[in-house]
Length: 476
Image 1 (cartoon, one colour):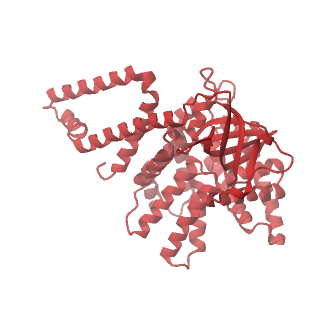
Image 2 (cartoon, rainbow, N blue to C red):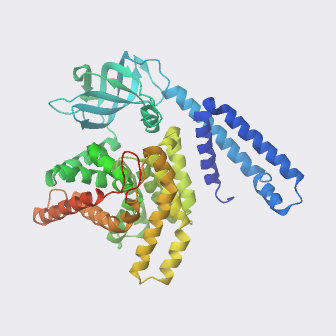
Image 3 (cartoon, rainbow, N blue to C red):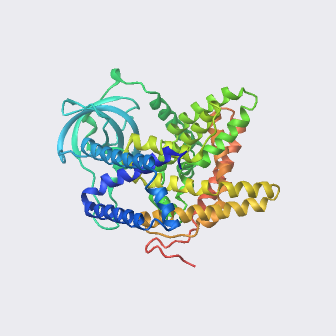
C-alpha cells in the first residue's frame, strides 16, 4: 500500500465527502464510531504480547505517515464538500423570477420541451466567479434550437430540484448534484435572446456538434427504435430511448450494456493500434492520447467513459515516459480527477457501478493471465472465464443495484456470453459507418442494413428478462 499513496488519498477523499454530506444529520454516529476506534487502540496496547494484535497495531497505528495522509484527505474532502454545498446548491431564489446570462454547453429535445445546460456568467446582474451550471427548460421552437457555444441572456423562474418524497422515491436534487447542476430555470422562448456576435467558440462545443451530426446520420439510415438504441450504444445518448426500453434494461440488469464504458475504449484502442501499426511508436501513442480526449467528449462525458479514457490515457503516458503502469493507481487518479471537478459525483450510480466493476475485474487479472497461458488455444476456456468474470462483477455491484433499482434479475449471467460478442460486432460496424459518413454509398448501404438487423436482434434478445418489475422477485 505504501507504493499506492494516491489510492489512499482517493479513499480518504471519498470518506471525507460522504462524511461532509451526512455529518450534519448523522454526527452522533460518526462520534460513536470515533470512540470505538479509540477504545480498540487502547485495548490493542494492553494486549501487545499477542502476535496477531501486534501486527494489527503495526498496520493501523504505527504507520503514522499514511494515517496522517488519510486523515488530511478525509478533512479536505469534508471541507470541499461543505464549500461546494454552500457555493452552488444553497440558493434562496425558489419560484422567483431571475435574469441570467451564460453559455450553452449541451442541448436536447424531449417531447414538447427543449433542455439546455447553461454555464452561468451572471445572475440578477451580478457577475459570478465560480462555475455554476443550471438546466434551462423552454418550449420547443418551430425554427431551430439554440446552437452550441452560444452566449444567451434572458429571464425566467428559478426552480429548486425536488427532494425524495418517500423511501423509494426519486431524489432529483441529489441526482442533479451528482451531475454538477444547481437548479433549473423555466423560461419562455421569447424571453431568451441568443447573441450570435458574442458566441464563444469552444473546442468541446465543436465535438458536441459532431456528436449531434452523427446522431442525425443514424436517424437517416436506421429506424426510429434502432436509431435510438444505436445512439445509446455508440454515442452515449440514452435520452432518446423510450421509458419502456430503459425500464426493460434496468429490470434485466443489462443497463451496463447500453452505457459506454471500458469495452468501447478497449475495442477502439485495439482497432487504432492495428491501423497505426506502421507508425512510429511514440507518435502513435500521442495520437491515441488526443483521440481518447476527443472520444470522452463525443461519448457524453459520463463517469464510465471518463474513467476508461483517463485510465487508458495514463497507461499511454506511462509508456511514453518509460514507466510501468499501475492499474490501481490509474483508477485512483481518474477518480481524483472526477472528484476535483465535482465532489458530489461520488453519489452518481453510474460512477459507483463503473469503479466497483473495474475493481472486480482487476482482482481477477492474475488468474485471467494464468488461464490464458495454460489454455491459449481452447476457446471454451475463454467463454468459461468470461462467464465467471461476469458473475463476479455483478456480485460486487449487486448491492448498489438492489438499493438503487429495488430489482433482481439473472439475465446478467447470460449477457456476457450471448450479448457481449454481438455488442462488439455492432460497435465495430457502427463506428466504421460513422467514420465513412455518407460517402461510399454502394458499400455503406448493405452495411447499414446489416447493422439494422443486428440492432433489432440485440433489442429483442435483451427484452427476454427474468425480473418482475413490481416486486423485484426472480421468476422461474
